[in-house]
Image (tube, rainbow, N blue to C red; front, side, top):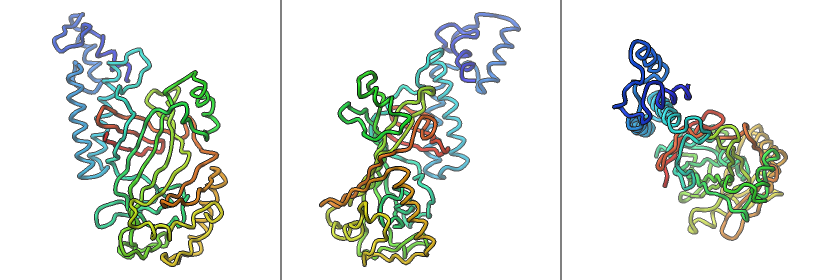
Length: 362
């Protein structure tokens, strides 16, 4: 166990500095038996010091990133992940013995580039550039119409920073309101952080990819690029030091440049609270879909509007369309991510559904 691993490093026959040159406090057969038992429990060679752990962690990090780039999240990646997680826990046990501290001392605030594949639901495959394809609806809680546009994702970023009292969110899950109120009153400060997810994407010409009733075709003379932002917040879990509880409060979608603004407005200009459940009638878009697909799309949108209290914001002059959620879903133990490993350059997290996310600090 973690505590046993920590005990084997900081006590159990070693002098207080835990270095390789330490000599056992107890000699003889009993000492050898104890040492062997601890070696079996930890699963690595004895003794363990910080230099040894740092070297193993560095090797595991290199293998993790290399296998992710070359093979994706296959068996080799999973093995590197397990190794990284094991040695990170051993190091945390030695550093934080008998103290309830985070296992990772690095500052989570900053901008992080997602280097693992996007984890939205229902991936449609990849384009010729090897970029993952999803419908716009799957990327955005079905908040924008037409939601069945097929989009390729170029980059994703996660921005995290402490929230100032004047910027505290208006919409908070019911079970977390007391904690946010403590931030507002000054009883607690600095625990609440933003958790925004920003994706740069391109609306694909679906004539070039496998056809599907879940995809509609955009007749575009040039690639139409956009930026999708989902705005969220995190609070530390009260019982698990490396768990962050997450909820999202809204989002925006906007063109990535002024050169395609007119075309962008033709596609997304109908988005509003009144028209969100209606099909776009833009002549630039082929909306020939099966009746079952249309009904499923409307049902998802209506469910989001009712369950989350979604309020849609009409397009502004720059082409930005937004929404906010009056009843965001979240709470400790329901929507969260666990920090598997983090240092000043790399962050690895596991979502509540088991998905693994790998980030590099920008």
